[in-house]
Amino acid sequence: MSLATHLRLAGAALIALALLHATFPRRFAWRDELPRLSLLNRQVFAVHTFFIAVVLLLFGGASLFLADELLAGGRLARAVLGAFTAFWALRLGVQLLVYDPALWRGNPARTRVHAGLTLFWAYLVAVYGLALAR
Image 1 (cartoon, rainbow, N blue to C red):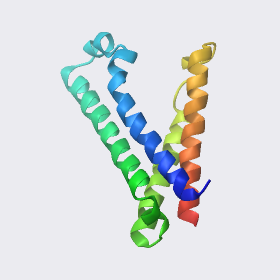
Image 2: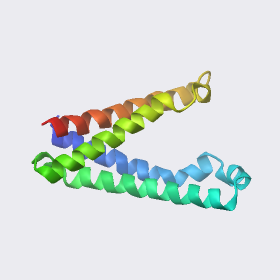
Image 3: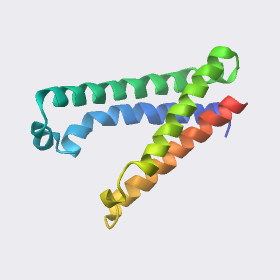
C-alpha cells in the first residue's frame, strides 16, 4: 500500500474519530459527571472538546484530500507533516504516560480500547513521520 493511501486512510480515520466525539457525552455520562464542575470549567471542557473535534476534522481532511500535495514536498508540506508528526507523537506519549493504568487494568474492554488507541496513535506517528522523512 502506498504512503499516499496510508495518508488517506489516516485522514478518513481522523474524520471518523472527530464524528465519534458526538457520542462522548452519552458514552462518558457527562450529564451526570459535568455538573460537579464549576460553570467555567464545564464551559471550557465543552469548548475544548468541540475544538478537538474540529482539529481532527481539519487534520483528517488535509490528509484525505491533500495526500499527494503533502507528499510533493516543499516547505509548507514539510511544516504540516512535521506538525502532524509532533502532534501525534505527543498524543502517543500522553496515552502511555498520563492515563493511569488503573483505568483499564482488570477491565478487558477498556484494555482493548487502550491498546487499540495506542496502536492507532503509533500508526499516525509512523505515517506522518514516514511522509515527513520522504
